[in-house]
Length: 107
Length: 122
Image: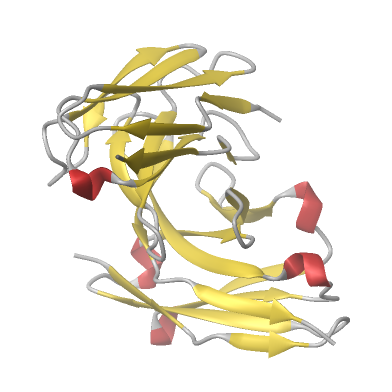
């Protein structure tokens, strides 16, 4: 099973700040890495697919990069509505796995 | 656009079974690769299983094998997930989610249901 490790687990940030969340895979997964946003009491929503491709309708301040084992989700110019938990997800091999999540708090 | 509407919250006793439904609209179920993901209170996301396009079969996470069944009723465009021999550790929100492939061999979860809270308590 591929283990995904996110960092940090929690971050308190101010609006307009740049945020970087990393996701490291225990073995190479190519570009089979996706990012989701989960606002409290809501279902997860897809942000980034295949490591760097923005999903339709996602604000341009969200971007992703990386391949192999190291991946990054960047939020340029954080907004209050971005308070959420962010998860990476690998579909390179079964069983599919998720990172443990990174909770963003807006100061 | 796909919409997934799940059944309502449920309370079960330990040892019982639960069956969660996921009604598809906007597409037919046969066009979709359905997966199930759960989330225990205050915890992260856990993939339970789904349709494996390569094998054309459903595949379950080893943790749930023998205890879970996922079926699809194409005439009603409704997917079901049944989990048996429940314990308190199965208390969670259960989500259905559709897998999507593009040119890559990898799929992502494009649409999600609203979630169904299952509480296991004596």
